[in-house]
Image (cartoon, rainbow, N blue to C red):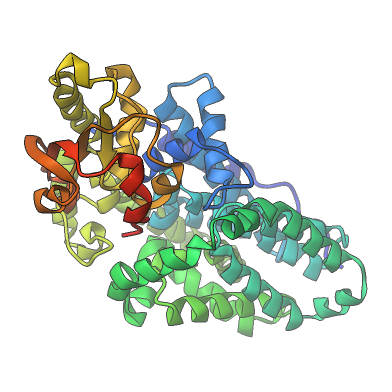
Length: 507
């Protein structure tokens, strides 16, 4: 049995605090991200056991509304705190693996400077929380392997269950964990009650996600099919593999050292199943053409192992240790504006161009933008809703009560859901994604304002289609740079009549 690790070094706590402060700084020129708008709308429709997506993010959205901050700050506080948790857990895991203070600082610094974790700590999305849960699961696995109390199995069960409440992709990591356990001495624990209690706990926590999927006919499979046909088709094995190093930034060498050390380093041999976990997850995601960041939940364990191996060598070489910290800090500072939107859009465009890294401004569809895609998705939403409000209030007063606003993607719709009430707009509807199952609302729909779409397609449903305005955002992603807004009258059948015939659009 290994000795209990010493308290975390003060430097680790300082790194975590600096990370928190950086993630809560003002973001000049940026507002809510497209996905954040969606998750806030999900919170509007929170029904724990009847949602077609894992409901934790919707519950967190509602929790954020209760915090004593403006909503933008509140939703950014939660991922920032999750990243602090990952940094502290990774440093703690490093100590459990046998690393001293130097190794724990090195691990914390690696998480701090990695562009992947900078960015996920910025965005109110399920991604950062999934990374947190599997980092916690990795800590529990290391604790069990080092001979600590069997009750750590329950921590593993909680982490797996919370992952299922966050993203269904947790099934990949759950499978990889099972293989890792079977490949380790922990398989002997299967003769005890502890692993089975962990499974029961995980399934209990996962129940809202699983019951919601069953209720809606497992929409996850339709979403995955569309995702493969659109975004994942642009992912190659080479881009997925090299992407790991880009996402790790200056800490990339430590990622490789960690994977190799878990297999070859004698001191880490008892924890070799961590690399089995990594290899299985990596292989599944590679075969499925997963995006490079999907592998992020494994990074903390590899950073921890790499910090132990590198720390053993660096701790006795003062100048090498200082050089390693300076290298990480310099690399982190260079990529800081790429991870956290601290530069206003004009300056960020210039900075991205000077970096000369095409990956920084590439999109999910293989195109490129002036801004990183996540940054572009943080611009223009309030202005777009202002244009919609002008169109709505220009309608004859008699048409206001029955008028319906439809967005043809979730970003446009969710933006109206958030900003619209203050402008006197009705709650919007859409056939896009999760909005479809929330229905067409209670209004008659004799007049429909459509944000986006195509006049010819709308003419199949309405007798009169008029282009009323355009919303322009040169900083946005391609489809948001010039958005038509139509007024549609004389529906060919009542809105409720054709709503369900349209079907859900997962594109």
